[in-house]
Length: 120
Image 1 (cartoon, rainbow, N blue to C red):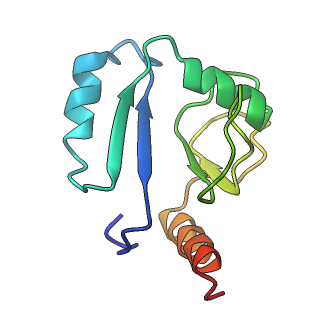
Image 2: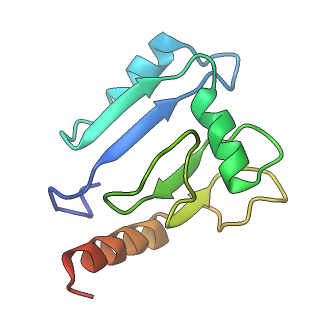
């Protein structure tokens, strides 16, 4: 996040229990890695967010290890809307997005912020 030095960026990290070691305490410990004030953390013991994103993204399993970009003002109704851009670290063959590449995700984030600001 240090690569995108704007107060307009908001990051929401949702922790899901996908691995045997995933629990609320592990989520708290993982959250300590991110000290940026623009970050909010959530613990989702029922995987509700992952199930919603599964449907939105057209995945075969609960979505996790996904990175989603949304424009400000995106309307969220009963389910998660399709993101403007997304990447993943999934081993699914049907993930219709590129695998995570930090430089590409950063560039897409900066581009989206530029569009919102009207500078691109």
